[in-house]
Image (cartoon, rainbow, N blue to C red; front, top):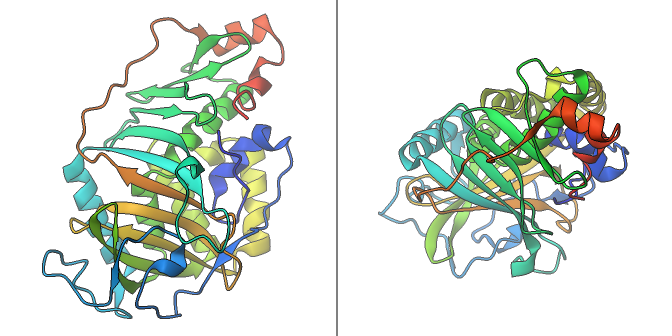
Length: 324
């Protein structure tokens, strides 16, 4: 599991306090250039372009946008949602841009992996980059998390205790945080500015940046995550931290970025950061495998959360820290 720094818009990180020794720091630590700064290339993003161009492509409505032109974020979000519905499935990898001087993420910076069916209720699988083992499986909205110390899969119950609610939020957030549908909904918080065209993995992509307040981005994110199977704010501790972060940084402007292929499907998503700061340490997701067949099945054996608690009273804490 990648250790997610709690930024003002990454509300899901509040569920992962077990990965951070229960230390919550709502202030973001990295940033990027403001969306109002024009650029004819995408190299400033830290994503690995193989070529750049300010000319438009006749292959795609998204690529046809001129550099500096603006698109309502809500319109762009609708186009992305339509493309994702057609795609039906996706695989994505999370990573970190690392050095601010590096224009491309190294292969080993791509860590955790998610396979996701792009419909609801949630059907997905999360594989931890450190162990290369699946830690989370969701099938038709039923969540299973792996507790490594007891070596058991733990199945979500229909009437979860408060501790189990936190367990479910922790695990589903690892899937939903970078769900491309959630990223699309966050784009709708502001106006999208075309930053340029590039190629990523041999595919032509259009680079967009959206700047909006932290409060708008946070609200969009948690609402979309809930719609797609992760209800963070149902956990009182997370809700309290969310409200604190929103009060502290809700009025601050943040910029997120996305690179779309000719079908308006996300190829790369860069998490929101304050404008003008260092790019070093910025988290991102890379999307691939649209339409691929996925192998996601419920574990053949599992225990309930209550059963694992009886095996060890601290098992519930371990479910959120065992992958760290």
